[in-house]
Image 1 (spheres, rainbow, N blue to C red):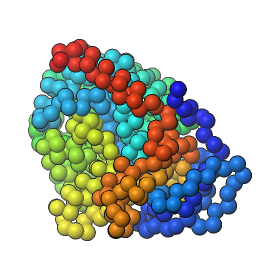
Image 2 (cartoon, rainbow, N blue to C red; image 1 turned 45 degrees about the vertical axis):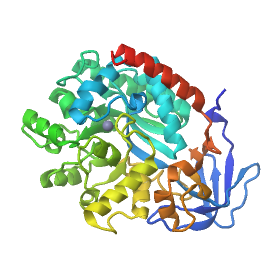
Image 3 (cartoon, rainbow, N blue to C red; image 1 turned 180 degrees about the vertical axis):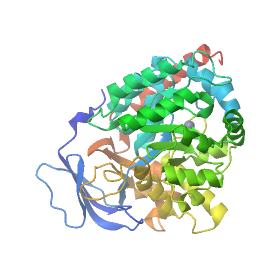
Image 4 (cartoon, protein in one colour; image 1 turned 135 degrees about the vertical axis):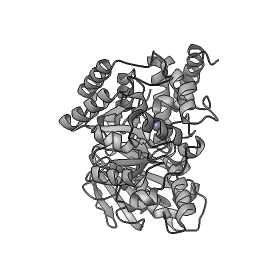
Length: 449
Ligand SMILES: [Zn+2]
């Protein structure tokens, strides 16, 4: 029997920890953090303990905002290890699309659950997830049940060379499915869940579909989640098909916009960079995925220098193969140093990118992303004793000392979803067992066994 999210206490006091509010820097302070209902009400010394509060003694721990991963594919968690050593378009056509086409409701559920165990257990409290072209309700159900905060959408694909027919939809069916899911899931889970239109990428969506999404998203004030400028071959194929650079094309379709989070942005020319800035499109940097698929290295210093908001994401277990947001922040810092030198993306900058900047990318920065009174209590507690150390400033220890493995407690909207390293809303052992069963059956259906 797993724990119900609705059963959280009214108030929680996290006492005696080192607090990293991550407002402008990783400057730390000692003291207590008080949560009342879903909000942070106190950060610092001399907290008054509300009557009936749940008091957690956390000396020797760090408290920081929960990580925000602005690009994930939970439906691909059970594809881990099944799509190795391929570049993007082959990876999609030969492995990922056939596997997604073979998904049924049970395998989607198993994949999403396992992914959520890993994401929550390593300190991520908000995700932006792209599902597959079916079973969006299953993803919605599991997100709500887990207690995580999420923007999610069902992937939209109404064309695409090499895409299995079972995965493709008509333009009308794709739009209708998204409209129905938006109606059912937008602002569900006490407002933790938002729907996001998710046209997969320019090569798998017709012009008609992209234009309709651009219009509908604007009309309904809904987010758009997509991929772009990931790999040289994908960039060249979009250019050949549309006669435009990918971001120029997306801007013309109304897809590159202030409500858009686009994964990757690895190969971006100067005109596209200007379009990203002018349209206020946010980019998700997925460094491990880009390195592992051999796609290239996104220059986040250049993007940030042009005032483009950049968040971080693990992408999916089929190309990462982990879902630990701290690892993405660490690799982002290492890559930026290798391109631009030592001060390019410090440990502090990388942690800010994984928290505050992710909130900015989603226009949730008035509610999330820092530890400040009045903000939603989406935060994590790290056991410093489990980090490589003990020397170094907190940001350095957390980023380079393995932050994800030190996660002890995770709160979303003031509710303790993870306590003492255990995810309370999902039975992790059962999720692993079910995922293994589901993968075996899925491989048979996809004729990969
Ligand atoms: Zn992706």
